[in-house]
Length: 132
Image (cartoon, rainbow, N blue to C red):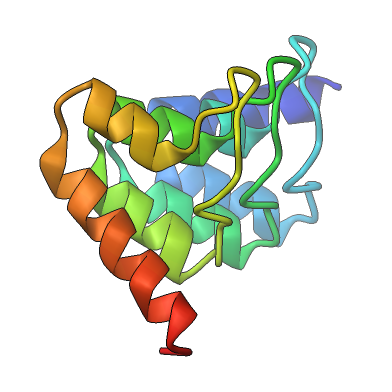
């Protein structure tokens, strides 16, 4: 548990070198810390590189918490487009995933006035429909 707590703290702080080292040493990228969260769920949202490292290390992109909130919902709600792109394009996150309030990431982006995030999600949804 201590290692997982250290790992999730490193992810939350954006400490890429520590996260990489712990992954290299075999830490479970989907391990749950003492607060019931994974590194992906607590990662520094404004750090797309942390997201990429976690995903490449095997972290699950769509894990939801007790309220059915996943990272994609947090990123859309907070307007972190660069990290959201990594989550979707590298991690193949489900852009249609619904949270506990039955909202998708696009709904949260619109509600919080992030038209650039909403536009990106629309484009991805359309691209998926035509097989791009």
